Amino acid sequence: MKNNIKQTMNVIGSNARKANSKLAIATTNEKNNALKIIAENIEKDTKEILNENQKDLDIAISKNKPKSVIDRLLLDKNSIKNISISIKNIISLDDPIGKIISSWERPNGLLIDKVSIPIGVIGIIYESRPNVTADAACLCLKSGNASILRSGSDSFYSSYAIYKSIRDALEKTKLDDNSIQFVPVTDRNAVGMMLDGLDSNIDVIVPRGGKSLVSRVEKEAKVSVFGHLEGICHVYINESAKLDNAINISLNAKMRRPSICGAAETLLIDKSIANNFLPKILEKLDHLGCEIRGDENIKKLFNKTKSVNETDWSTEYLDAIISVKIVNDIKEAVSHIEKYGTGHTEAIVCESSESSEYFQKNVGSSIILVNASTQFADGGEFGFGAEIGISTGRLHARGPIGLEQLTTFKYIVRGSGQVRS
Image (cartoon, rainbow, N blue to C red):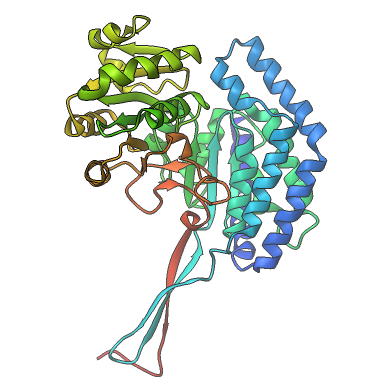
């Protein structure tokens, strides 16, 4: 069986490399036309996709999967409509390929252009979000990259249904059908083969899932990885903050969708305003069903608080739970974030430009928000059309991975007969 999987995966890798050579030079019109047909086909297939999604939901419920998993799995007619809209948004974006990033002339007369090109073949390994199938595939297509999609077992039926709709659409275009491929098995050996690079046919891996998946990818991958291990995001309420902003941003950052990686997991607040602000914020969080965890100082201000322990500060809850800490000042807040944060997303609520600038300069996370919810840590909200994921790496892509982050570059050097002495 393992040999059969290996053969299947190697064929997928080889086909992706061949498809990429054609996709890399496809015109903007050819790519946009394919995306238009894909968007229309997914909407047309709404009933079939929802039927398959119900299979995933039934299995998850029978296995007593957490509510956060169910939330990530669930699709409805509106979800499918939004997937289609997201693809159409990608169509409207500029083609990132073939752009002259910079150009200059050397003293010897050589003319040099730095030009954007596709990365090549991108492997996307994801778990329980079936919409990633369309987002990832279509971003890769628009940026001229062939993609290999590997869904987790939780969302297999839903993801395959969306992929089938995409594949059917590709057959109506001038592009190679293998520009987008889907791993047809849930066997974990397939992941290992992708991490090995499929005979050097995969250029980059993008993991999108829980800690165990991303840990495995980062540990075993023999190719480059764009991704983040955890999203331990913070909201820091500075002493200069307005109460209304502090309340609204805290509630939205935690409770809009607690299960996403951009949800706030820790709330920090300056000591000088804690007595006035915290009871109001925590009461509203509690009213929305959020569990509050804090020390004795927090318990004195809100008696429903549960005891916090050291591990809470480094826990990605992905649930309606938040850890709360009173800090002496902005320096202590930044120190806490640097110690426990994962480089994902942090927000400051303040009216002081000095505090804002200090926070921006001293926090090294990939996304910093000033007076806005951490839930804006999303490619669509950044105007990228969609995203494959969030990267907290220091090289190449950081933050939401959209079209431009899926490109690299080459140098075109034009001469008139120059030779080097």
